[in-house]
Image (cartoon, rainbow, N blue to C red; front, side, top):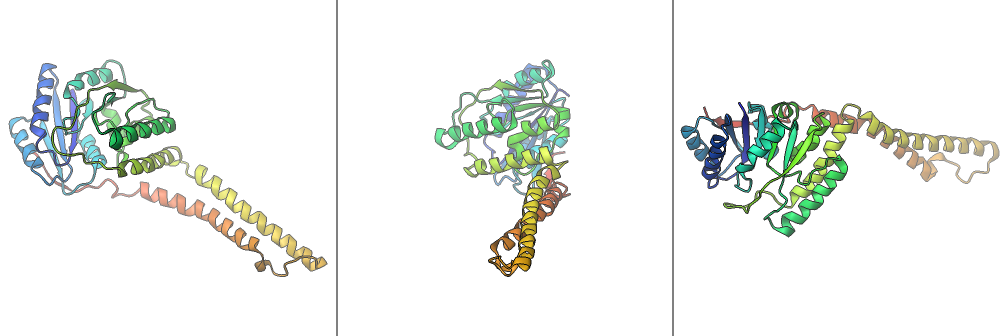
Length: 318
Protein backbone atom coordinates (compact mmCIF):
# COMPACT_ATOMS: atom_id res chain seq x y z
CA UNK A 1 0.00 0.00 0.00
CA UNK A 2 1.31 3.42 -0.95
CA UNK A 3 -0.29 5.77 1.56
CA UNK A 4 -2.04 5.72 4.94
CA UNK A 5 -3.84 8.96 5.73
CA UNK A 6 -4.36 9.43 9.47
CA UNK A 7 -6.98 12.03 10.39
CA UNK A 8 -7.76 12.80 14.06
CA UNK A 9 -11.02 14.67 14.57
CA UNK A 10 -13.36 16.12 17.14
CA UNK A 11 -16.87 17.30 16.19
CA UNK A 12 -16.26 17.66 12.45
CA UNK A 13 -19.43 16.11 10.99
CA UNK A 14 -19.91 18.89 8.45
CA UNK A 15 -16.42 18.77 6.97
CA UNK A 16 -15.91 15.00 6.71
CA UNK A 17 -17.92 14.25 3.52
CA UNK A 18 -16.20 17.03 1.57
CA UNK A 19 -12.78 16.08 2.92
CA UNK A 20 -13.26 12.41 2.03
CA UNK A 21 -14.44 13.21 -1.50
CA UNK A 22 -11.44 15.49 -2.00
CA UNK A 23 -9.04 12.78 -0.85
CA UNK A 24 -10.66 10.14 -3.10
CA UNK A 25 -10.16 12.43 -6.09
CA UNK A 26 -6.48 13.03 -5.34
CA UNK A 27 -5.80 9.32 -4.77
CA UNK A 28 -7.48 8.29 -8.03
CA UNK A 29 -5.75 10.97 -10.09
CA UNK A 30 -2.36 9.74 -8.87
CA UNK A 31 -3.16 6.00 -8.92
CA UNK A 32 -2.22 5.62 -5.27
CA UNK A 33 -3.23 2.60 -3.24
CA UNK A 34 -4.38 3.98 0.07
CA UNK A 35 -6.31 3.82 3.29
CA UNK A 36 -7.93 6.61 5.30
CA UNK A 37 -7.99 6.17 9.06
CA UNK A 38 -10.37 8.52 10.86
CA UNK A 39 -9.89 8.67 14.64
CA UNK A 40 -12.95 10.11 16.34
CA UNK A 41 -11.60 11.59 19.56
CA UNK A 42 -14.84 11.45 21.56
CA UNK A 43 -17.02 13.63 19.30
CA UNK A 44 -20.38 14.76 20.67
CA UNK A 45 -21.92 15.32 17.21
CA UNK A 46 -22.65 12.93 14.31
CA UNK A 47 -19.04 12.53 13.24
CA UNK A 48 -18.99 8.79 13.89
CA UNK A 49 -22.20 8.23 11.92
CA UNK A 50 -20.65 10.08 8.99
CA UNK A 51 -17.51 7.89 9.20
CA UNK A 52 -19.68 4.77 9.15
CA UNK A 53 -21.48 6.05 6.05
CA UNK A 54 -18.17 6.77 4.34
CA UNK A 55 -17.01 3.26 5.16
CA UNK A 56 -20.11 1.78 3.52
CA UNK A 57 -19.29 3.46 0.22
CA UNK A 58 -15.50 3.04 0.26
CA UNK A 59 -13.64 0.07 1.74
CA UNK A 60 -10.47 2.15 1.98
CA UNK A 61 -12.02 4.10 4.83
CA UNK A 62 -11.46 2.90 8.38
CA UNK A 63 -12.64 4.43 11.63
CA UNK A 64 -11.64 4.27 15.28
CA UNK A 65 -13.83 5.84 17.93
CA UNK A 66 -12.62 6.72 21.42
CA UNK A 67 -14.92 6.41 24.40
CA UNK A 68 -14.05 9.96 25.41
CA UNK A 69 -11.80 12.83 24.36
CA UNK A 70 -8.16 11.83 24.93
CA UNK A 71 -6.52 14.49 22.77
CA UNK A 72 -4.79 14.72 19.41
CA UNK A 73 -1.64 12.93 20.53
CA UNK A 74 -3.61 9.86 21.59
CA UNK A 75 -5.49 9.84 18.29
CA UNK A 76 -2.29 10.07 16.27
CA UNK A 77 -0.58 7.37 18.32
CA UNK A 78 -3.42 4.90 17.70
CA UNK A 79 -3.55 5.88 14.03
CA UNK A 80 0.18 5.28 13.67
CA UNK A 81 -0.19 1.82 15.17
CA UNK A 82 -2.91 0.99 12.65
CA UNK A 83 -1.26 2.51 9.54
CA UNK A 84 -0.05 0.03 6.90
CA UNK A 85 1.03 2.32 4.06
CA UNK A 86 4.65 2.85 3.04
CA UNK A 87 4.12 6.57 3.60
CA UNK A 88 1.93 7.92 6.40
CA UNK A 89 0.24 11.28 5.92
CA UNK A 90 -1.38 13.16 8.80
CA UNK A 91 -3.82 15.99 8.29
CA UNK A 92 -6.54 17.81 10.17
CA UNK A 93 -10.22 17.21 9.45
CA UNK A 94 -11.33 20.84 9.35
CA UNK A 95 -10.58 21.41 5.62
CA UNK A 96 -7.82 23.91 6.42
CA UNK A 97 -5.31 21.39 5.04
CA UNK A 98 -5.37 20.70 1.28
CA UNK A 99 -5.38 17.03 0.17
CA UNK A 100 -3.88 18.33 -3.11
CA UNK A 101 -0.60 18.63 -1.18
CA UNK A 102 -0.40 14.87 -0.55
CA UNK A 103 1.41 13.89 -3.80
CA UNK A 104 4.14 16.48 -3.23
CA UNK A 105 4.73 15.28 0.32
CA UNK A 106 4.64 11.65 -0.84
CA UNK A 107 7.34 12.11 -3.49
CA UNK A 108 9.62 14.04 -1.12
CA UNK A 109 9.65 10.94 1.08
CA UNK A 110 9.68 8.35 -1.69
CA UNK A 111 12.11 9.91 -4.14
CA UNK A 112 14.17 12.44 -2.19
CA UNK A 113 14.83 10.15 0.77
CA UNK A 114 13.39 12.20 3.63
CA UNK A 115 12.30 10.45 6.81
CA UNK A 116 9.77 13.14 7.63
CA UNK A 117 8.40 16.14 5.77
CA UNK A 118 6.49 18.84 7.60
CA UNK A 119 4.10 21.28 5.98
CA UNK A 120 4.74 24.99 6.33
CA UNK A 121 1.68 27.21 6.22
CA UNK A 122 3.63 30.22 5.02
CA UNK A 123 0.45 32.20 4.39
CA UNK A 124 -2.08 31.67 7.17
CA UNK A 125 -5.69 32.71 7.51
CA UNK A 126 -6.04 32.38 11.26
CA UNK A 127 -6.39 35.21 13.77
CA UNK A 128 -3.07 37.07 13.99
CA UNK A 129 -3.39 37.85 17.69
CA UNK A 130 -4.83 34.51 18.82
CA UNK A 131 -2.77 32.20 16.60
CA UNK A 132 -0.26 33.72 14.18
CA UNK A 133 1.91 35.78 16.54
CA UNK A 134 1.97 33.20 19.37
CA UNK A 135 2.64 30.45 16.82
CA UNK A 136 5.65 32.28 15.37
CA UNK A 137 7.15 32.79 18.81
CA UNK A 138 6.45 29.16 19.70
CA UNK A 139 8.12 27.91 16.50
CA UNK A 140 11.14 30.20 16.99
CA UNK A 141 11.67 28.86 20.50
CA UNK A 142 11.34 25.25 19.37
CA UNK A 143 13.83 25.80 16.53
CA UNK A 144 16.37 27.22 18.95
CA UNK A 145 16.00 24.39 21.45
CA UNK A 146 15.76 21.48 19.00
CA UNK A 147 18.14 22.75 16.27
CA UNK A 148 15.61 21.57 13.67
CA UNK A 149 15.12 24.13 10.90
CA UNK A 150 11.35 24.03 10.51
CA UNK A 151 9.07 27.04 10.35
CA UNK A 152 5.85 25.34 11.43
CA UNK A 153 6.25 22.51 13.93
CA UNK A 154 2.55 22.42 14.71
CA UNK A 155 1.30 22.03 11.13
CA UNK A 156 -1.04 19.04 11.04
CA UNK A 157 -0.09 18.19 7.46
CA UNK A 158 3.00 15.97 7.60
CA UNK A 159 4.40 12.90 5.85
CA UNK A 160 6.46 10.09 7.38
CA UNK A 161 8.08 6.87 6.40
CA UNK A 162 6.16 4.03 7.99
CA UNK A 163 9.15 2.93 10.05
CA UNK A 164 9.32 6.40 11.62
CA UNK A 165 5.78 6.30 13.03
CA UNK A 166 6.32 2.74 14.24
CA UNK A 167 9.48 3.73 16.10
CA UNK A 168 8.22 6.81 17.94
CA UNK A 169 5.69 7.20 20.74
CA UNK A 170 3.30 10.15 20.97
CA UNK A 171 1.49 10.78 24.25
CA UNK A 172 0.20 13.61 26.41
CA UNK A 173 0.39 16.72 24.21
CA UNK A 174 3.52 15.70 22.33
CA UNK A 175 2.01 15.85 18.83
CA UNK A 176 3.45 19.36 18.42
CA UNK A 177 6.96 17.91 18.70
CA UNK A 178 6.86 14.83 16.49
CA UNK A 179 9.80 16.15 14.41
CA UNK A 180 11.79 16.59 17.63
CA UNK A 181 10.88 13.10 18.85
CA UNK A 182 11.76 11.63 15.44
CA UNK A 183 15.14 13.40 15.35
CA UNK A 184 16.13 12.15 18.78
CA UNK A 185 15.03 8.65 17.72
CA UNK A 186 17.62 8.81 14.94
CA UNK A 187 15.50 9.97 11.99
CA UNK A 188 17.31 13.18 11.23
CA UNK A 189 16.55 13.70 7.54
CA UNK A 190 13.68 16.11 8.09
CA UNK A 191 12.36 18.32 5.32
CA UNK A 192 9.80 21.05 4.87
CA UNK A 193 7.33 21.95 2.14
CA UNK A 194 5.25 25.10 1.77
CA UNK A 195 1.57 24.11 1.78
CA UNK A 196 -1.67 25.96 1.21
CA UNK A 197 -3.89 26.99 4.07
CA UNK A 198 -7.46 28.21 4.10
CA UNK A 199 -9.93 29.52 6.62
CA UNK A 200 -11.96 27.05 8.61
CA UNK A 201 -15.16 26.33 6.69
CA UNK A 202 -17.20 24.66 9.42
CA UNK A 203 -17.23 24.75 13.21
CA UNK A 204 -14.72 26.40 15.52
CA UNK A 205 -11.16 25.74 16.57
CA UNK A 206 -10.61 23.16 19.32
CA UNK A 207 -7.47 24.77 20.71
CA UNK A 208 -7.14 27.61 23.21
CA UNK A 209 -4.38 29.73 24.70
CA UNK A 210 -3.47 26.98 27.13
CA UNK A 211 -1.91 24.99 24.28
CA UNK A 212 1.03 27.42 24.18
CA UNK A 213 1.72 27.07 27.91
CA UNK A 214 1.35 23.30 27.71
CA UNK A 215 3.47 23.32 24.60
CA UNK A 216 6.49 24.78 26.33
CA UNK A 217 6.12 22.42 29.27
CA UNK A 218 5.99 19.51 26.82
CA UNK A 219 9.10 20.78 25.03
CA UNK A 220 11.01 20.86 28.31
CA UNK A 221 9.77 17.36 29.09
CA UNK A 222 10.78 15.99 25.68
CA UNK A 223 14.18 17.68 25.90
CA UNK A 224 14.85 16.14 29.29
CA UNK A 225 13.61 12.65 28.45
CA UNK A 226 15.44 12.55 25.13
CA UNK A 227 18.75 13.75 26.55
CA UNK A 228 18.68 12.19 30.00
CA UNK A 229 16.08 9.41 29.84
CA UNK A 230 18.77 6.72 29.62
CA UNK A 231 21.28 8.61 31.75
CA UNK A 232 19.19 10.62 34.23
CA UNK A 233 21.96 10.82 36.80
CA UNK A 234 23.88 13.07 34.37
CA UNK A 235 21.16 15.62 35.06
CA UNK A 236 20.04 14.91 38.61
CA UNK A 237 23.51 13.91 39.73
CA UNK A 238 25.03 17.29 38.88
CA UNK A 239 22.52 19.34 40.88
CA UNK A 240 22.29 16.72 43.62
CA UNK A 241 26.05 16.48 43.99
CA UNK A 242 26.48 20.26 44.15
CA UNK A 243 23.73 20.67 46.74
CA UNK A 244 24.88 17.74 48.87
CA UNK A 245 28.54 18.86 48.81
CA UNK A 246 27.51 22.40 49.76
CA UNK A 247 25.66 21.08 52.78
CA UNK A 248 28.51 18.72 53.62
CA UNK A 249 31.13 21.50 53.49
CA UNK A 250 28.99 23.72 55.74
CA UNK A 251 28.60 20.82 58.17
CA UNK A 252 32.37 20.27 58.30
CA UNK A 253 32.89 23.99 58.85
CA UNK A 254 30.43 23.97 61.77
CA UNK A 255 32.16 20.98 63.32
CA UNK A 256 35.55 22.67 63.01
CA UNK A 257 34.12 25.85 64.52
CA UNK A 258 32.65 23.87 67.41
CA UNK A 259 35.96 22.17 68.10
CA UNK A 260 37.70 25.55 67.93
CA UNK A 261 35.27 26.91 70.52
CA UNK A 262 35.89 24.00 72.83
CA UNK A 263 39.66 24.62 72.71
CA UNK A 264 39.69 28.44 72.78
CA UNK A 265 36.25 29.59 73.86
CA UNK A 266 36.29 32.39 71.25
CA UNK A 267 33.27 31.37 69.20
CA UNK A 268 30.21 33.58 69.29
CA UNK A 269 27.87 30.59 69.15
CA UNK A 270 28.01 28.02 71.93
CA UNK A 271 25.57 25.54 70.28
CA UNK A 272 25.78 24.31 66.68
CA UNK A 273 21.99 24.34 66.43
CA UNK A 274 21.96 28.05 67.29
CA UNK A 275 23.54 28.88 63.95
CA UNK A 276 21.44 29.49 60.80
CA UNK A 277 24.11 27.72 58.77
CA UNK A 278 23.23 24.50 60.56
CA UNK A 279 19.74 24.52 59.02
CA UNK A 280 21.09 25.61 55.63
CA UNK A 281 23.41 22.60 55.66
CA UNK A 282 20.55 20.23 56.50
CA UNK A 283 18.38 21.75 53.78
CA UNK A 284 21.14 21.57 51.13
CA UNK A 285 21.97 17.94 51.89
CA UNK A 286 18.32 16.94 51.97
CA UNK A 287 17.66 18.74 48.69
CA UNK A 288 20.61 16.97 47.12
CA UNK A 289 19.22 13.60 48.14
CA UNK A 290 15.79 14.57 46.81
CA UNK A 291 17.29 15.39 43.41
CA UNK A 292 18.91 11.99 43.31
CA UNK A 293 15.88 10.02 44.44
CA UNK A 294 12.59 11.83 43.84
CA UNK A 295 13.46 13.25 40.43
CA UNK A 296 15.02 10.07 39.08
CA UNK A 297 12.33 7.71 40.32
CA UNK A 298 9.45 10.03 39.41
CA UNK A 299 10.53 10.43 35.79
CA UNK A 300 11.34 6.77 35.31
CA UNK A 301 8.05 5.63 36.83
CA UNK A 302 6.14 8.02 34.60
CA UNK A 303 7.84 6.83 31.44
CA UNK A 304 7.48 3.19 32.39
CA UNK A 305 3.78 3.36 33.21
CA UNK A 306 1.86 0.59 31.43
CA UNK A 307 -1.26 2.76 31.26
CA UNK A 308 0.27 5.87 29.71
CA UNK A 309 -0.93 4.94 26.20
CA UNK A 310 -3.95 2.90 27.15
CA UNK A 311 -7.07 4.29 25.53
CA UNK A 312 -10.55 2.85 25.56
CA UNK A 313 -11.76 2.36 21.99
CA UNK A 314 -15.55 2.36 21.92
CA UNK A 315 -15.92 0.77 18.48
CA UNK A 316 -14.24 0.36 15.10
CA UNK A 317 -15.41 0.00 11.53
CA UNK A 318 -15.27 -3.53 10.19
